[in-house]
Length: 90
Image (cartoon, rainbow, N blue to C red):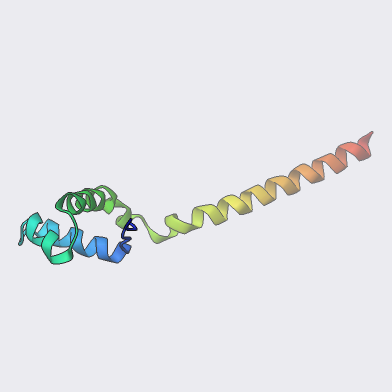
């Protein structure tokens, strides 16, 4: 039994871009890269579907998680402070 081949993101992008250029047929590209034409079509559609994410500002891509962690830490700190104040008020 053969294992499935795994392709890098760079390889998929390269093949998808060539398919988008339409200088060769899907069959020709399939022979050139030794993959099924349906696979190339799938990569092409995925490439087109996710292409808008390239234009998201760099600060919005990775910074959100860091900001969320900082906000969460601040909220927990506030909760702790309020609990201490409430306990002291009793």
